[in-house]
Image (cartoon, rainbow, N blue to C red; front, side):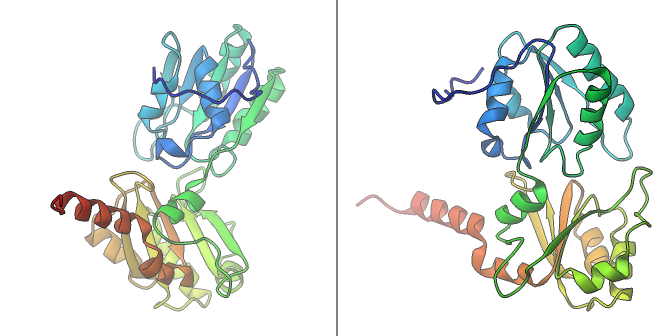
Length: 276
């Protein structure tokens, strides 16, 4: 267990028989909220997702039980219903349960489904928001999700529905015409189809796109392309999920706001400088 201490604020107590649904942020453990850290320190059982950095689990108390409940596309994964039922069973057994989810539990995290299952079973719960990858991942790439003079609206969408196919209930023409910046979660599998739908709706094939893999982690990779070539260039560059895809003129700001590379360059300069 880490010796990182929490300031002496009046933090809530995770009671027996309760479930806290907490967002762990987009990857970097430093983006964890203090409320989530407080929950980690108290939980008897932690049920965590595939996108939660396991270093975060070091904040758990030594006798906490850690349960993996990650779902990844194309791989054997627990069913959502089974995860929800497990949370109910653990709470009914009088455990203090922390459900730790990547990003924010209510942004394409199915946290609402799990919360409703708790409501149906009469289980008390608390929601702890987290930084979602569509905001935090862009910030680590040096791309603002909104910027004065460029966009006064931003759209977040998922690249596949509950059946794993590109969502056909979306009005792609309206999205193409109405949203200057579109941030796409889980879009890599159907990127070519999505790009074509947006171009059919009027988006310019030369419009800038950024693909961010392993957002906020040391392994983060960023590919700057255009809408017309994003699918083929992503495949050629072997960009793999988890990834965030952003379309819009805000991508062009990365040339000035790429702060992570600046930090890395400064560290390299400091390391090579001779002491005076």
